Image 1 (spheres, rainbow, N blue to C red):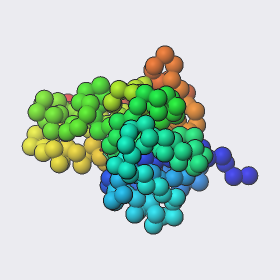
Image 2 (image 1 turned 90 degrees about the horizontal axis):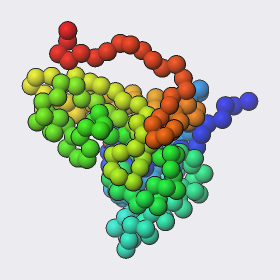
Image 3 (image 1 turned 60 degrees about the vertical axis):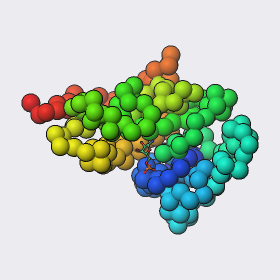
Length: 218
Ligand code: GRF
């Protein structure tokens, strides 16, 4: 008997490299999530062409075609329900969502952000990390809540900041970590092993490892 895979939708607005890492991970026989649809709010998102070429069902819901955020979200919700998705993974999806929509997908919708939240919410995270002078940067996967880049944290990955880093070089290091972190986090969510309890996530798996990142190295 084939293993049950939790149907998952991915929402993108652009390049879609995190979407690709989730799709690729989902192809492993033991992976507990299946990508049933990729939805973009931008018709020209490069990630959509890639998903289509992979034979994944794709949907374009151009937010510019809707008079209100609510009307756009109603269409989005319909597409998600039609896809039978039980989990929604935002991967570079650049639209703010209303509390109503977030509530509908409460604790079933996750996002990846290129910083160690709660530091550096919003855009230009790598520029701001370099301006601030932090020695360790990283990325976070969290459950979505109405306020941007908040919500119970599921998983984080840290990378060092090197002297001489540019936003581009730091961003590439963080992105490589994102591509490893997001599939790992979705796996925990799909297995029901990342549960929200009192607005914090408890992980029901032995994932502890005491290796630490020191930057600079000591
Ligand atoms: C990633 O850095 C992600 O963390 C952020 O937007 C970027 C999307 O990149 N939310 P991609 O489209 O997945 O390549």
